[in-house]
Image 1: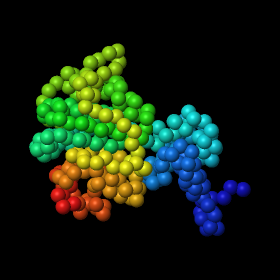
Image 2: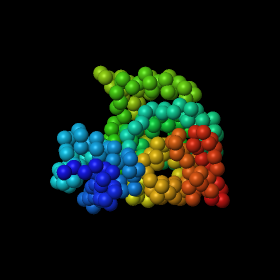
Image 3: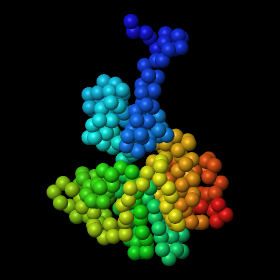
Image 4: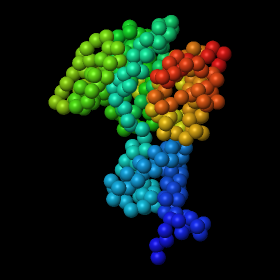
Length: 289
């Protein structure tokens, strides 16, 4: 006989939601042990939403069945890894952020003879190309090296190809204009069939590399780190680890750019940073930090 949630709670038994939570915990442990990808400290809500969606798409009736198949079917495992990775992005996303980079960060970057940029969690690369365009227009690209990293090989491959749907270009052009553009957006790509292929000059100073914020080490002597809208998917413990990683990677006076709903100010590393723009979540590492 089926018991209600309240009856189970009253008897101290697991509810159906709690069973799913336990199964998800076991699934994430199994994925880590089998494939080395660690989602155990990601936001529970984010992970649960993505897993349940994968079950629906693949017509799988329970998390336990999903775990059984993920451990034995490579294609399903790859699908789940893509589901769990963060791939929400667009070119010149949040134009006011790029406007603030031009106004407040570029003058700082111009004081350095060489600029090492770490774009962490770059997903499919739209924001990396955005930054490359901005640096070109500010005459900084030739003395910059961008390390664009993600743990998702599928996303990295797409990013390196630099081929995006032409359907998105109108929106990207509007974002670009609102970001304080100094050129013409269509000059940075050429259209072919239903795709937009980014100009090869934008890739010249970009190194695409596999890096996992959850398990890998820092990038030494970095002048600017861009990691936007990634930390919101991590729990507090993992966010703190990543803050430590960013702090140890930046040179004194280096710039940290986070997403609109993220901050470092309330973490234990917040004391080592001062805001460049509180609204756009841009921070500068203190010289005594």
